[in-house]
Image 1 (cartoon, one colour):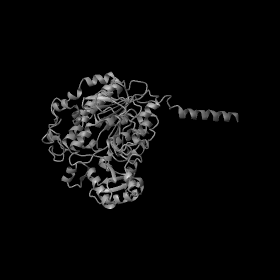
Image 2 (spheres, helix red, strand yellow):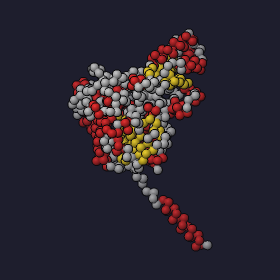
Image 3 (cartoon, one colour):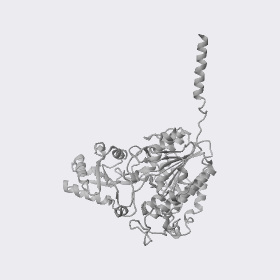
Image 4 (cartoon, helix red, strand yellow):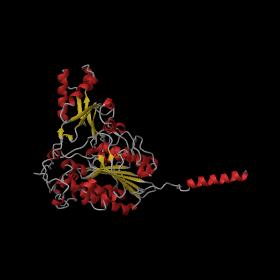
Amino acid sequence: MKHILLALSVLMSYVAFSQTKNIPSSLSKPKLVIGIVVDQMRWDYLYRYAEKYGQTGFKRLQKGYNCENTHIPYVPTYTGPGHTCIYTGSVPAIHGIIGNEWYDRESRSIVSCVGDTNFKTIGANGKEGKVSPNRMLTTTITDELRLATNFRSRVISIAAKDRSAILPAGHAANAAYCFDGESGNWVTSSYYMDSLPQWAINFNAKKSAVKYITDHWQTILALKDYTESTDDDAPFEKRFGAEDKPIFPHLSPVNIVQNPGTILYTPWGNTLTFDFAKSAIVGEHLGKGAFTDFLALSFSSTDYIGHQFGPNSVEAEDCYIRFDRDLGDFLSYLDKEIGAGNYIIFLTADHGASHAVGFNREHHIPAGVLTGDTLKKKCNEFLKAQYGKDSLIEMFYNMQIYLHRDNLKRYALNEDVIKKDLINYLISISGVAKAIDLSTAKTTSLPASYLDIFINGYNQKRSGDIQLVLEPAYMEGYLKGTTHGSAYSYDTHIPLLWYGWGIKPGYDHSQTYMTDIAATLATLLHIQEPNGCVGKPIIGLVK
């Protein structure tokens, strides 16, 4: 019996050892994580311009793990909520960033998602640095990385737009830098520091913004080769102020010298961002320490150009061809500076964009434009005709109606009745598909996948009372150029590419969401997911 017990004991010990012998004593981790957000990049741009891309940019990243069916699960599909969702794994209902700006009932004013007058600009005299992440209610994956390493990981965020830099950085970052268009400097907020580091001062001293363009913005290829775009002179594109037509060449060096911010309306705004990122990697010694560092990058010029000319323009195509080359150069730089295989990159977008209204109409696709001011005026006129009272609507913003609650009380009007009457009126307006009482949105007759998008975007403390849903291809206020913000696929379908350390090649066609990015990063890095995260790890990627 003793021999049997001894044999069982030895066998159990062997089994326990065999189950644990492959578990490392310390977890392997990448030296650096780089998040790349390409502002307004529709998913189809990966393929639409593929013949013009080289092998070192987008196509190299596509050799990693490609999530082909990634969507945004909320509205509005704007820059501020998009960057917040990527890094928090959460939605506006929880993280609180319901738009780039929104109407604040308490102050009776429009507030910026990152605006904060308690802080000042560091690096210039403008207002760009009067910002903070204080309106974001949850942590980010970058916050969680800092917490997990007792603040020994370094987190740096860079973007031309303030909100695109501040929100990914989180609350506990070492720094977030944005571009000041008046001075041509990269600046930050006193939220992070009292003075710029020397490497940033040295970069600004080069006045790079005025050196990138030595000639007008010309196409990088012969104009006849832009076969994925409409003719250069399209009537539904915006022109720059000094131009007679919205055609090449654009914006001479004189424009940049007089106003450095105009570089953001050219592909060199992205080049400038890449170069500042390289300086940050060296200046901050990213990827050189004992703990994983994080560099959050966002590229804004794609959005400025997209709004100006639309998705079918030669300008958009030229911008992405040039971005692909800049991306390839940056990846080669990372190979040398950090070491191939020592870093993770994910590339995604904060939202897509609709085709221009004029383009759609030219091709017999239903499309149109509505304006918030017109809708607000019509609604107030309707309510006055019904109830004999003025100013029952306080604000129309982000396609939401804010009822004037003080006036409703003053006139002893029933808010629920007012909303019901207003919704019935709104759906009679051409171009309006639906009007939703946000307080009872679950009872609205919409497909569940769409209904969830509106519920996820509703924050009870910050959102309006009624959400307008426009018909597909209808937009607010853009007769020329284009915009975004809807729940339709042209705005919600975004690229999501993963590449580098620990990433096995693969294509994933299952439904994934923007909220899954932070959850996946948390799994890869073995850290806690952000505290408001509703996303799930992408299983095929983390197996």
